[in-house]
Length: 443
Image 1: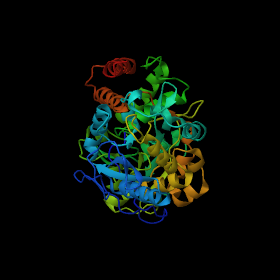
Image 2: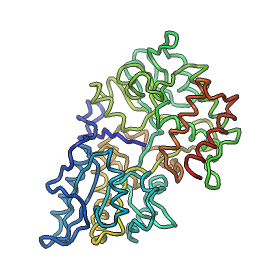
Image 3: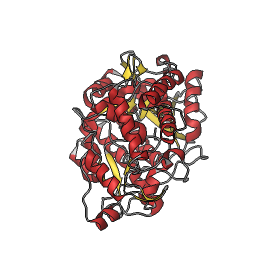
């Protein structure tokens, strides 16, 4: 899950440095003119007031405030008032207010994975006209966490994706006189050939695929590309030859081929995968497009000159597929006295033109097919081209807390590669992972 976001405040063309981006603040309570401690709204000043809560993030908050102001000025019946809270407290604040049923907002910006923990009876069902758009114009993964008992209890505002694209060290590739690899075999051949090590010290990682998000994504994608399933009858299942081969292949890249190590998982260097790109310690890094402005702003790297973003290929197999979580979404609590007004604003926000502008402002991938495939979108954010080409292959990761899923995969993989888990082979490690996941998630 993309907990800390560094979206673009202003997306520039690919040949220049990206605009300034920054981490979510941790203290300020609101970027809106009207701060609120919560509570269901009532008509005020001739307009129905809708209290909207979101987490603090400079780019997100600026975009939300702009859309609220635009909507408020467009009609005379509804006033949407945004309030922003520290990210670290936001999930608990939403959950507490939903359970209290009378002390929260009328509309929330909420991470999809959190919604899985909310009971359907605490949420308001999306109206029929919005549901039609969800079914007909949205990609599968963006709806996974919003679907409960055959009904939709929210509207996605992004396609969260950690597969399909990789950061590439353009300076290094240019110096080597080679093109970006385009097939799975080519990627790992280049990674093996150009990794630079001094014993256990990596001066240049050929391919870093071992972040907290990326390892789980690439492992599960390899299973899916072999037309095998890891989610079977409501539980995780890795007791098959396909999963075992995928696991061992990834482990061999670390322990045999040594194109990378586990630093991005263990945090032993104090930095992670995209930061190794920023410090010129990685040739390629498997990461979602949100990482692009991170490298640009935090390390003063110029996109298109110092580094680039290229397509990351699928594992060799009969199908193309990768897992994806449901990202940021809008939800309306059942207890809101102005739920109809809140949904009217969501419908306005979800209109293609408004949604496109918000996602461009925030550096997000649109969840609607009609928006992500609109040539005007790519014209404004050309670096998204590798991602837009693979959106149709995404599958909802699983109806579970994906943080637990990724943390368990990462922990067992570390133990397996470091030989600290006592696993005789990949089958034993995956058997332990299967048990751990199904126990930790109470499946």
